[in-house]
Length: 198
Image 1: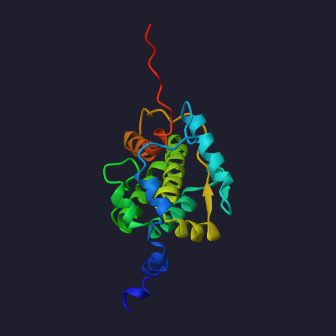
Image 2 (image 1 turned 90 degrees about the vertical axis):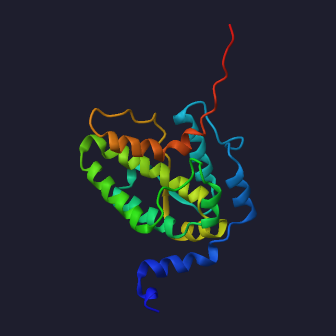
Image 3 (image 1 turned 135 degrees about the vertical axis):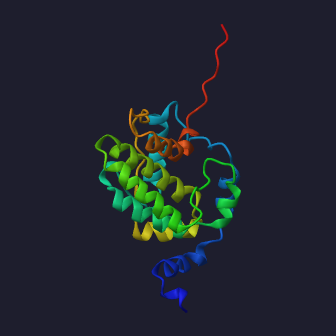
């Protein structure tokens, strides 16, 4: 009873009926390479393709990544984290889709660090874009089909940034390393270039 007074625990418990992944979730999780129609020749085109899938998702409300602020993205990411399926996380061991956060406290600590980084004007956009990538990855790969329906009923999802990836800044190596990890799943959606033998 004492634990149930914790609002975070109540939110997590509310998602428990949705923790079991559906067959389609397990098939997607065990598929290591993106399926046909979900890739592009470079990062902008790959993200444009994935955005088309998001926009076609029934009952999913979206808006551009740039229209979100960090507070909104952090709140959304917390909700996705509380709704995650542990069974899917187990499948992603050693995979780019694996979550780095073992606890909600660890996620909140990462959010604190992101706020510090984003307070530097030259890092703000990169921090936000990285969060948009990670939030979309969590929605697609870490929620069961029924949990996604719960999120769709209450939340808006950011679209993926459709520009080239951010370059390493002269100052802000830690923020860039975090951004690189956040977009690592998206990079898998870039079509491998065939080598040409002359």
